Amino acid sequence: MASHQGSKRQLDASAMAGQLGLADKIVDTKALENSIALCAKNKVVLPTFAQLADPSKIEANYAQGVDKNAPDARNLFRVHWYNNMRGERVSVPDHVVLPSSLTGVASPIIVMFGDRFPMITAHKVLAAYSCLAPRIITGQFDPSRHRAVWPSTGNYARGGVAISRIMGSRGVAVLPAGMSQERFDWLDKWVSDPSDVVRTPGTESNVKEIYDACNEMELDPKNFIFNQFCEFGNHVGHYEVTGRALSSVFEHVNKSNGGRLRLAAFTSATGSAGTI
Image (cartoon, rainbow, N blue to C red):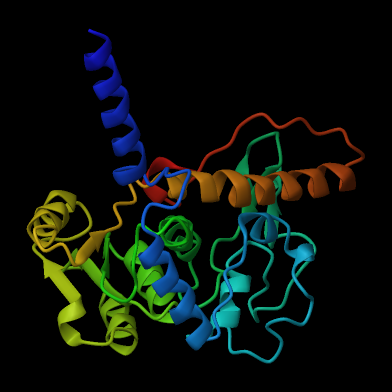
């Protein structure tokens, strides 16, 4: 009985690290060494979640003069909510307060913008970084031999391809063929090979077909599937980075209202597999 329980604990730990990405130690030293060498070659420095949650910890002019939509490693330090449309850092995330005269609701409604992020102008680039970075630093993902496969209906896949390219690995987008042409035009410019854009049947609601394709791709050990629905890094990134950004906005608005406001509700239409 004791042996059976020990085996079960071991399987649970394996699932935590393998399926959920919750490894608490280096899984493959050689893979980590390959990542370090590739990052050094490409002059890539990985920002910490603490830095992305509080960009004041990042050198003020670190990405100065860098096109916010370019595949430049310095743009990793813009993968946070504290940007304006030009990619310049702001002290409070961009937002608007909708008055009751517009909404018909007595309480003011705060709307925080998710299009201030670099490269893809969508917050999903944060989700992608949050999933890939932990896998790299624990030696689970080896950019010298793995292809990073990003299944989604569009923006998470674009974010994954952007982060993969910057880190020097091959990124693959898997998305429905019926999604907007704008997304495919962007992907065509960012992928290293046209075959790295995998079109599955359907449109926005055809999620099953996306993962059917991923199940086939996973048979090749060189393909590493970053499933946003089970990568715990997705949750951690939003908890640490997005959560604090939302808090910063509320505190700012509350202060401007004499501290009289009480946070009553939160709603989100930004997806991220339910993590927000």
